[in-house]
Amino acid sequence: MPTTDNLTGIYETAMVWLVPFGLKVLGAIAIWIIGRRLIHLCISLVQRGMRKQPIDPTVIGFLGSTVSVTLNVVLVVALLGFFGVETTSFAALRQSA
Image (cartoon, rainbow, N blue to C red; front, side):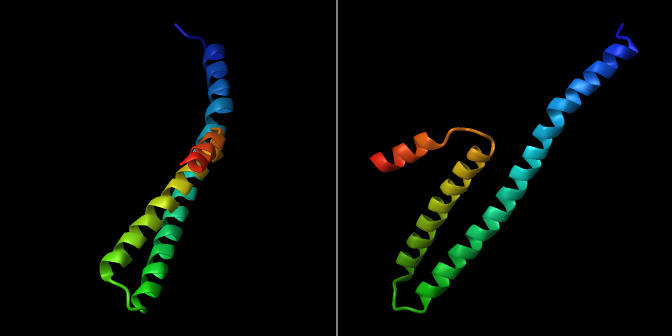
């Protein structure tokens, strides 16, 4: 049966590890939400600007999707970098393509 000293040690160890990780997760969620809203704003501005020109609606949709995918990839790579994952390999893949 665990003693109070053991439970206190487990609690202290858990706090040392889980609090920083939890704060990072909350920060990543905030970055994700803000990033998605900024992506949506950017796409709507691009599409609104293209609608004022004589451009085919299919092209507008295609370019909006392309911008969306590109910015979402940038957001995911930024989140990975936030968690400490090396993202230089993504840059190398991008340069080789």
